[in-house]
Image 1 (cartoon, helix red, strand yellow):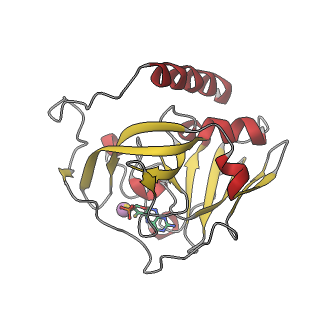
Image 2: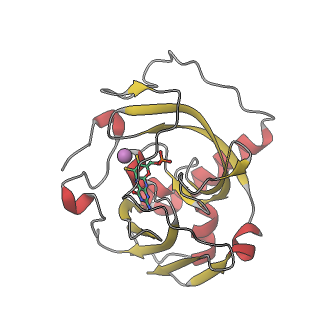
Image 3: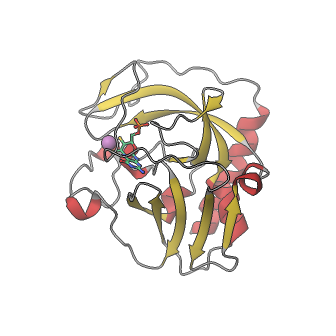
Length: 213
Ligand SMILES: Nc1nc2c(c(=O)[nH]1)N[C@H]1C(S)=C(S)[C@@H](COP(=O)(O)O)O[C@H]1N2
Ligand SMILES: [Mo]
């Protein structure tokens, strides 16, 4: 299952990187705005009241859990991985959506290749430098638009928006994308994150309005 999803995502990435330039999508395209959402043009900030300052020299990203090759990447090692750019929409559970966000960084599939999760791995648990955490089924992380972003619109991701690096999972509500990401743990069973233990949905598909558990 994971393998098929992974191969499909890799193929899509190749096609997207080949297509020169990204065409903005029609704002009125049917199904683009999930139910109960309103389009915003600004970029609101949502956090726990802390925006940790993580200097690049102290930053690392750890890949662990049910993997063949656990790793802790320094900022230089992370940035030496293949870089991709993708344009996606952003849907916050508090009902605002932002279209055409241009993120650059490392595709989740690249981290998957590096860590080599074991077949038993079915869930991913992310933790962050501000104490945040969130859980996502591995299948959803293997979509072709999921990345650990270090750039937004061609500039480093600002501290308020989760720099040095943040997770982007466009097809799920934005709380599933850990800002200030620090660890990525592969698990056999689901482990609820910060909002999920407080009643938010374990998956969080905006088109199914999976807001609360
Ligand atoms: N580390 C961390 N990641 C986080 C959050 C947070 O508080 N801490 N908030 C989440 C929520 S609820 C949303 S909607 C988005 C908001 O991202 P933004 O502040 O860039 O708009 O980040 C998500 N990731
Ligand atoms: Mo949110």
